[in-house]
Length: 132
Image (cartoon, rainbow, N blue to C red; front, side, top):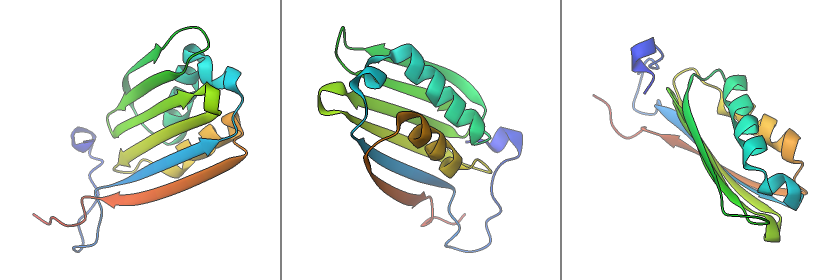
């Protein structure tokens, strides 16, 4: 991913990762924010651009009045996704980016806009084990 644009990281040793994957569990978010698929699409696109990504496509689906939303923003550098449960004031966000993209910036945009009262963030390096 991102190789077409010359964004492939230099492989210096076996511990260099191809990309970073952030999993964010965000709690205590206003249910109104978690029901609005159009606003979430715009927010995720804003987060992708803040991270320096090229947006290819997005698709967001609302599960009906008062229900949650699931959505994905497909990037040249990988993807962002979000799944919401307004009845639990909970959102699960997935930020996977490679190349020179900065996933921490995308996370900062999401956290600033959603204002969770609590969050659990896990970060994984992807593509570390294989060296061509």
